[in-house]
Each structure stands twice: as structure tokens, then as C-alpha cells.
Length: 111
Image (cartoon, rainbow, N blue to C red; front, side, top):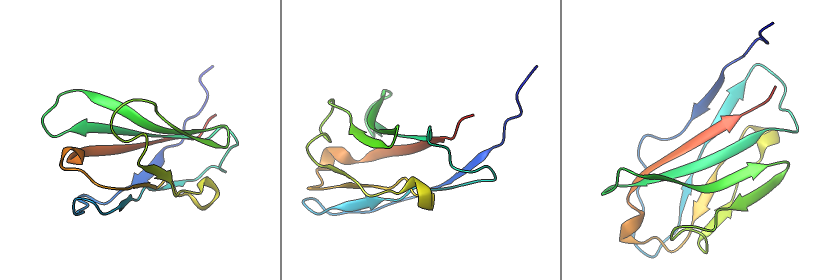
């Protein structure tokens, strides 16, 4: 049989502005009709303005935040979320011009 699937609604601001050298919070809140499981995962992706490639820059899984060891964000990122409060936000410090692009927050709440 097929297990029923309930959607998770993810909310992020359409645009976020920051100045070079400052920090910016990328907020990601979500809503699910199901309880938040211990297996919840949150992944942030980044697509540079001048690129077609999307890279993964951050994961939250098994109760732990993991900053991906690729790209220019690894030394400048901070986990600011709390899945129990339906929050998957991150902070990027010391903004650089190359940080301009599209950030995507993806939330999965198995089963």
C-alpha cells in the first residue's frame, strides 16, 4: 500500500537585503499538520546569480546542524533555527558580493 503523505508548508521572505560585511538572517518557518518527528531534516541550497548550479550549503538532521564543507559559506554560517518551534533559519555573517543569488529552504518531516 501507499502511505499517506501530508504536505509541509514552508515560508521564506521573497527577498532579503544585506550590506557587504554585515550579517543577514535567512528565515525559514514551516507548518505541518503532523507532529515534528525526530527525523525532521532541513536543507538550505544556494544558486549564485551568475550560475545554473545549485549547491547544498547547510543541513539539519538527527538533531544536529551540519554546515556543508563546500562553497564560500562554510566559515560564515550559523544555525539559528529550532525545529520544535517550526523554524529552520540560518545566519550568514560577513556578507560578500558573491553571496547574491537564490537561497532555498527544504524541510522534510518523515514519515
